[in-house]
Length: 130
Picture (cartoon, rainbow, N blue to C red):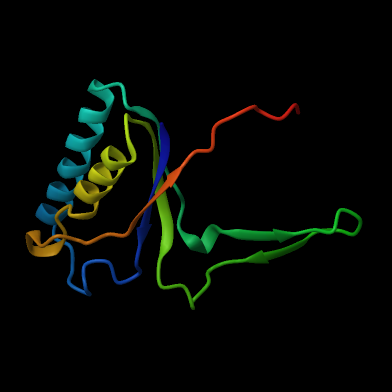
């Protein structure tokens, strides 16, 4: 079963506490350990980091007129999509377990970040012809 784990960050990630170099290293090591486990298990399909929301564009089109393009940032946002992991695991529970470990990664002062991770199943079935 394939799942997309979407890592959302809050602008005040870490509760407003500054990140030290040690905090950044601990967080990176935590993510690297999970990434390595998923790679070794053959569960990781793809991963990606996204540029900040200030680079985002919203495109709306009716298919006739020129599209309307709006720029970010979006100050009313409480969180934004920062990256994703596409995984192929045996069950939804496995995907949730991976998301929970990722969410609990260390933040400033070693405290769990409680980073929101959205888990979404990839629909299967016949692929539409392009």
